Image 1: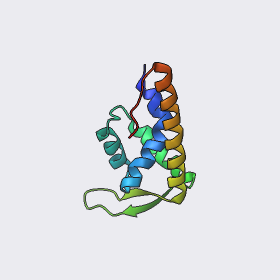
Image 2: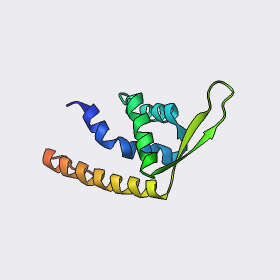
Image 3: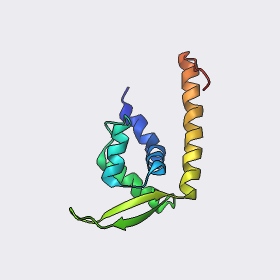
Image 4: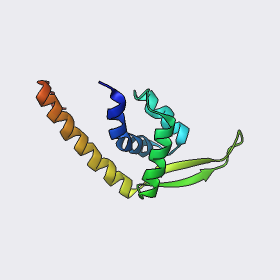
Length: 110
């Protein structure tokens, strides 16, 4: 199975989760996603997701000057983004539980 197709479907939720923990600029978000285990996530996919979530009103942005290069555009989650993240997390959990049931995998409740 090609995991990249799963990542595409979950990228909004993953990006919102990373930015929920700490504001970030494009490559910082890419780096944190990769460090969390999404090694194959593409730079362009993340940048496009950040722009789309911003346009949809789920993120705010601000610019921070940099001494080492161009200014960086940071993204921060807002109330709409937290709501999108919560809904997406519930949808993912329900889907994963269904697939686990189909595969005969039992999960221990946390």
